[in-house]
Amino acid sequence: MRKRNILFICKHNLFRSKVAETYFNEINKDKTIKAKSAGIIKGNLLNKDHKNAFNLEKAIAKRFKINIKNKITGSSISLLKKQDLIILVADDVPKILFNNREYIRKVISWRIKDYDFSEEENISQIIMQIMKKVNKLNKQLEMEKLK
Image (cartoon, rainbow, N blue to C red; front, top):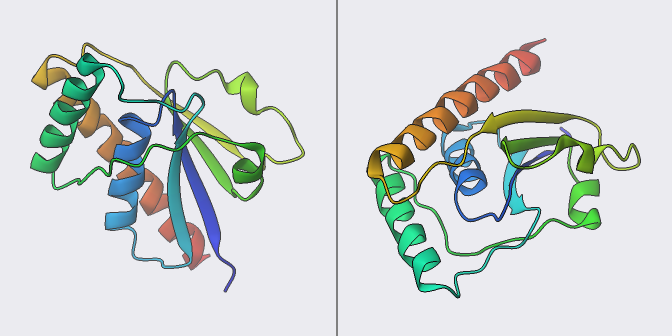
């Protein structure tokens, strides 16, 4: 059976795309599908405020049993070429960046907003929005497999 690749993309690969990747890989039972995540701009945690926000996001995600890894990945043409499905998790990633037919088979935009990450409630809401979208995607992929 042919393997399929899904790439979740957000702006910096620090939170939204990482939550989607981690949660999808946890709930997906089809081992022929592998999800990764990346940012259109490779994020960094050089700033103390970024580190604090990232640690808070990781802690809240952990409450949802989503263990975000520290590895931050940027997108590249070679990474995009390997994907069967690209999902723009964030509302601040323009879909037009992915209009090159050479390597894009399918692009979906979820438009999850970037809220004030100093508020735990905002972070929890984002995680729940992403989980809902990932659950729906996973069910769609399961139905496609049955066809």
